[in-house]
Image (tube, rainbow, N blue to C red; front, top):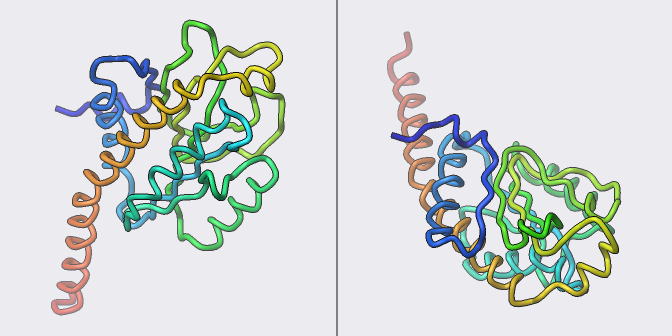
Length: 208
């Protein structure tokens, strides 16, 4: 039995956890299954390829874009990153081109030493730039973040000197988990749309 209330409790799991992909897929699927079927999924991967630690988002965006999936749209790749300079314009573009989009915000973040390597999934937006004291618009109906290094001092230097190996491992896990969750939820949403369409057709044929 799936407990719907658990999706409201933030998830934090180390990337080294034995079944980390399964844990993330279960949580993301629980959230997506309750999403309205007519809302397009838009994934915004925030960051830049000019900083190792801050490249988590663009790496995930590039990996997801390779699937060329019709089930979601991607903003933020290594080729065309979404960062502080264009984030606001990107969000305006999304809101103009999608009707009630369900936005998933993805970003790297800094945290405690004991939390480095942890992947977090939570309801509500990610707040990019908070770790480096920047005021940027919040992103997402839900968020996925990866704690790539320790925060609290010399944040720019710390992000620049984050191990690429850690970033790549976390990016692979998040990419696989998110893609699996979206694909798993797609048939459910398709059946919901078909059911709604059949009810609408029936009401037209047999008006009350």
